[in-house]
Length: 360
Image 1: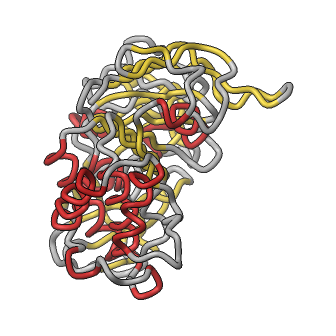
Image 2: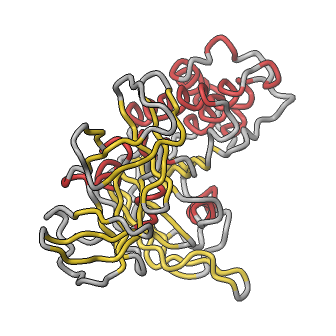
Image 3: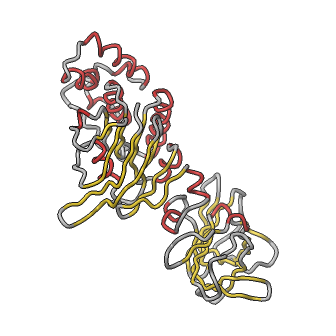
């Protein structure tokens, strides 16, 4: 196992810089997920760690050794790709054994490791099959088995589940997390799926446009997003937002929305750094909004009702923006009905609209 340190890492293609000064420390045995939209630089960053892309600047340390100039095979890493990259003419056993054979290891050395990996990944009954006789999930397990047999100090996963259907993705992310808990290896995992990031990571690194937006434990990022980008990216359904102008009234501060309505702001979070006239964005997650019978200054006309079984999503407009309200109670609310809403003070977020930063 190995700790990983990235210091001022950047990547440039000609005059275009795509990764900008990444500083990140990953502890020995930690499971870190790089998450962000397509094109944010997360896969490029991983490929630089793997040695598949040249590092334009900065220092990469793996296990205390500077790895910038090391060839991929010298970095003691294993990588699992989005495509399974299996040899179609080789059996499952031979696919897993391919690396040790190339390294000219004795079969007496790697055979017990293959058998152990096959048992761990539930592949024991498939070792004689060709890849075409396997399901997508089984093929991904073979790719993982090939990585495990190498006994690396660092595992790299580059969107390994994106080719699987929804049910298999749920199953495989559980298996990958369980595998990490057994092996205790350091893992860097790249995905654009924020649900994967939330459920698998010890820490999440949210990236955007080649930069890190925020680093932290999943629930810390969910509950205290540093800016509008992180707040909007994490969560499904996404956080609701309404832009407005801060105004002062007899009952305290309020946010005047685009449609002229006003939302009273709670004392917490207090926009201490904002003054009347400041442009702010209010954010509340759908599951934190309460429907109430009493009059409220937040009223939404329901346009769409989505029952999912476990919960119901109500969609409508507030301040000119589409909002979602999630309730776990079976509801008789119909489209066209107006519902009064309560925004609990402890779950209200305020952001500076121009900079995007969260106001503490």
